[in-house]
Length: 422
Image (cartoon, rainbow, N blue to C red):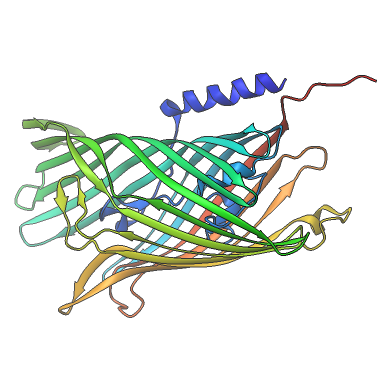
């Protein structure tokens, strides 16, 4: 039975590269850089502000720090499916709109290789997501700009405990995906005639990052975990296809006048250096409190052949807490954890207002919990993130309020165990 479950999990991961629906976003801020970047957070970590670098949990799949994989319990097999939704209210000086999207986000599995020392996790995760549509007009024409798509990754993460309390790990990811940017120009003198330009970027490549964790035992029930992860500046390969055409519309029909297609040769695009640190305090089956902080260096980064001077270095801080009212209670609701937290970060976007540069900020507050089966170790984690993007001191600038929903189902089985008959 366990072998069949392993085969099933492997088949799902292999097949999902063709059926996988990556995390969708609907945000005008995703037009900058690579769009919305994925932070490896599941419902478990997102409920606590998104912390994960200094978090250890042997029954949760956590890609935030590969060293965590060394904590996977012996004879355990974890399979996780994650769903996500985002609901956004976007407003600027002239207009406002509501946008939403829901879809499958992640599929992953984890298992030990060497008992209590070496573990491995593999999953399909989103790397980034682009989704926006912007319109404006003048006396001559009306203009429409949109972006859609993103990059997925197949990640292999492994962690090894070198000596008591100290683990190291590495994650290697294969990235693939297509992002499309579209611009259309409708001429006011002839609303039936318009021009369209489309840029399509097909991205492929490998990325890696390293991590370490050190657990300090205060006594039998209390401990402190220190964590760090590092990703060097790296490059991905992409192919750009450029389309330009003019069209005439008549009723529901579209007549193509002419089209020029230019397929460029392969080139490379930059991924910024990233450094993250984290610390957590744990009181077994009662309390966990943690803080993460980190940075990404976007200075001089070339995104698909263009170095955008409006992209700058970013920093973030996250904090989170998990409280378990009574882990030994016979009532399931008393064993349900209470998770909450918050996060603050700078987006790598700078815009100019009245001659001054302003960097876009993001902050939010999170809550969540977990429901566990009485008969098995299977569980379902839920998280809500209430957030804001923009510049609070500039009331007339573009900003958005959002609610992110994450739902993760984890199946936990025991494998490689021989039945004994007395």
